[in-house]
Figure 1: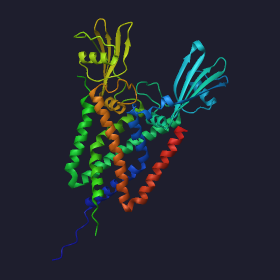
Figure 2 (figure 1 turned 120 degrees about the vertical axis):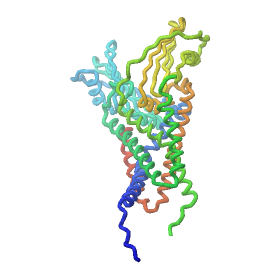
Figure 3 (figure 1 turned 90 degrees about the horizontal axis):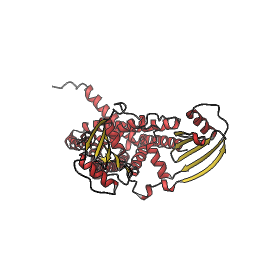
Figure 4 (figure 1 turned 180 degrees about the vertical axis):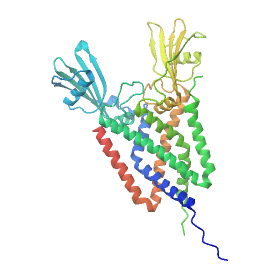
Amino acid sequence: MTPFPRPPDDSRTVARTLKVWTRRLHFWLGLYLLLFVWLFAVSGLLLNHPEWEFTRYWPRRQEVISRRTIAPTPVRGDIAIARSLIVELGIAGEITQVERRPADNLLIVQVNRPGRIHRVEADLVHHDAKIVETTVNTIGIIDVLHKFTGVRMDDASQQRDWALTTIWAIAMDGVAIGLLALVASGLYLWYRLGKKRIAGLLALVSGTVVCACFVFGLTRPS
Amino acid sequence: MRRRPGPIYRWTRDLHLYIGLFISPFVVMFAISVILLTRGRLPSGPPPDPIVETLTLPSPLPALDDNLALAGAIRQRIGINGEIDFITRNLRRNTINFPITRPGTRTLVRVDLATGQVRLERRDRGAWDAAVWLHKMPGPHNVAVRGNWIFTRIWGWLADATVALLLFLTASGIYLWLMLKGELRRGALMLAAGAISFVVVVVMVVG
């Protein structure tokens, strides 16, 4: 007796297609994020090892001091004046500090971008500004790129005010979401490898236990 | 007939799998904390009011000039484990203040060294803050005292290991991709697209 040909098993086809596309997503995403992952991984390592001599970029910084005449500003409020001032002086970056020193008639404005810090001491009465431009080396740039978010956990008043800080923060979020997708797709691909489930489970559980000990286990004071 | 992959390929693939599975919880923790850090706030909201407690040191302190040693002796006497952070000692007032931090908890310790009176202000912020704390530790600041708690040191080693293993995963991933002959072109396109995005955004931000 000749058996009827077996109808295609839809669920197996779907599972196979899902596996093929998950695999593609896994390595396409990994390749796309490669340089970003290298940057954040290496900069994280450098940040954790300030004792390594070559990571000490701050003592090797270069400073250039200049003076400029500034125009009277029509705007009011320190933040608005600071923004107007940096536009007039042609400085681009994230404003990280605005401080008024009434005794000296000074408005201090600090503007940061990776590799470069401008500190402007503007005398709004005499329309004069002292500008200190600090530049750091490549290690310093890498260091700042790791942390350049424009916001601070301990200071809710600090908001991003430079479009490129927002773009960089979006890039950081994108890398983080991409890594989460890599983990999720990796877990799925491992699950589909029937033979390696037990050994993989041991690796996953041991990593989870160690990580959870730190995230949850050390929270309460003794 | 399909050719059986060689031992180097099989070893690399297995190591990629098992190491990837081991560090995946760490990668998840670091990725989630990045999203919190770029927002500058926690889902749990602003920090709660501190729980304030006063007590007297149970035994006198030894005369110590070294601030970290003194803070360590106080930490031992008040029984709070954690990383001692920036220490402020006022010799004129004979006081010492320092925070003791640990994942999710920060306790500010203020001690009157003349009377032995201690004021503790503790803020518990939970697992979100723990992830942020771990992301930043050990970090570049306060090098002179950093790692004064055993778990900060262990975490530092784990963070280094996560970086080293992540770099291994990228290298082994490239090797595994190169072995997939049918995906070379599309993979190269993704690599090139990623490299172009990276260069463009870094050049724009750095200037």
